[in-house]
Image (cartoon, rainbow, N blue to C red; front, side, top):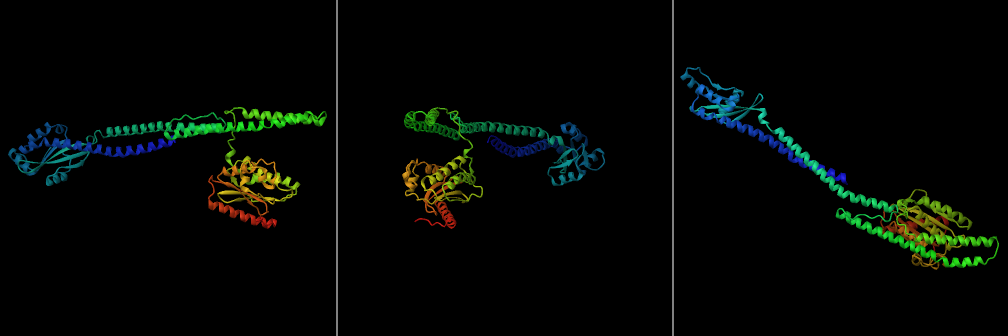
Length: 487
């Protein structure tokens, strides 16, 4: 952001400087030229009074040499032949036009000015010649020629251009310096915010951001600090909850320890007492660890949210559960995992969700009950269907409620924590998806996990699409298993 701002300021200032400096430089050159020719006109005007009085060669020569340009050889007077002949006749001179001073302009240019009666500028060697017509006492037109060297026409232009260039460079450097300072003022709070987010991700929960800088970054800093405080509070609540739940194990452990003490002597009794002691020690360790306040060292896995290959995780977990299914005589179907399917769910979370669903199948359906896992990629979402041929769920809404007992799940058996389906639901909703329970083609329960790939919750049309996908998969499973869905 800092260098981008500097580049923008550099480009804008350079365009402004060029837009003003180039026309101004041209104007300065024109002003220098006008100044030089204006001086030449004034110098030509100094000889005009003498021409109106006399055309005598000697007098005109003295008048020309008395002027500053005449003394330098830059002034000449061209008198036509008729007027010159009159004076020379009186003085005994020969006929012809009279030229006083050094002539540099071409004769045709002089005659053109005399005929037109208007001043003109002609290019000559090493400069320019101003040709100014002047009326004589005889009524003829004389031409006064003033030579303007090239150096006088461009006098001071180079210096003015250098000054303009220096001012333009100074403006550009100044704008870049100001832009850099502004960029630093904007970038430093953003860098502190990014660094604090990185530190928070690494587990340094005491990290906070100074609330300074531009208004937008101050708002972001306030939001970040508030979020960090909430994270610390949530972790503290979770630790307290874990400690409280673990502490409840002390009562049954006390009873178990007393009962183990009354077992008498023998290897089995000694092993039981050692196991109870070890279990009590582990519970105490859990309680102490949960109650320890270590906000600066509580690690957070930074790579967990990077996502995983759903097909690979499902194949791995199905390999584990298939061995147990073989022991219980369950038929297992797996489909849709033949290609890589990346989802925005951490590998441990997806594995825990699958274990919760497949564990429910083994826990709440009789041995020999078939089940299937089907994966479908719909472009903007991944749908995972876990189906079984068990008795089904009487009240799916109650089963999705966090903490619902085993009586609300398949088989009506007591002993479930009621957290398995809630874990799966939270995994799906963390991506913008959802979880639904229905009837499977195998006759039992079908749990559909909708995992959104772009972080947006599926719309109604998309959900209908998911149901159509489910129906298509049901037809495929019906073809392979020969089972019919229950009403």
